[in-house]
Amino acid sequence: MSQENKTAEGFGMPWENIYGYAQAVKKGNTVWISGQLGHNKEGELAEGMEAQMKQTYTNIKELLSRYDMTMENVVEEVIYAMDMAAAFEARKNFKAEFYDNPKTVASTMVGVSGLALPKQLVEIKIIATV
Image (cartoon, rainbow, N blue to C red):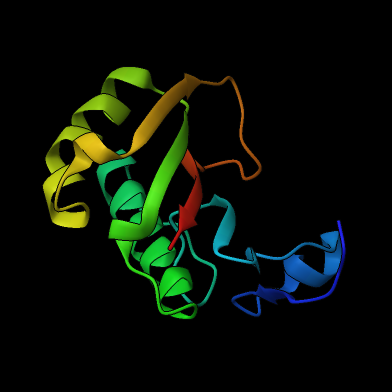
């Protein structure tokens, strides 16, 4: 992939430099958002599945806004969850808050036995396009 016309965004978290990755990358009309966590601007995880998922979507919205996009530009999401039942319930509760029409997003949820941080319960990866 050519580096020309490719831009990257981050939150300035220490682990971005330690592990060497971007939170979001745009090339052409597409933005790929790396798996997002439910942490605040200080890097602290929210408590519980619902709080983490809500913060995760808030972080996704922030990254999209940097490319003049909204949640309506999202075409695919992959949700990685430590507890599938809790994640389904949280997603059901928040879908209307973050998506005007959630049925226009290809969504996959995957149950996992571990995520990057010890108290992390959910991670969401996004693809958006104009």
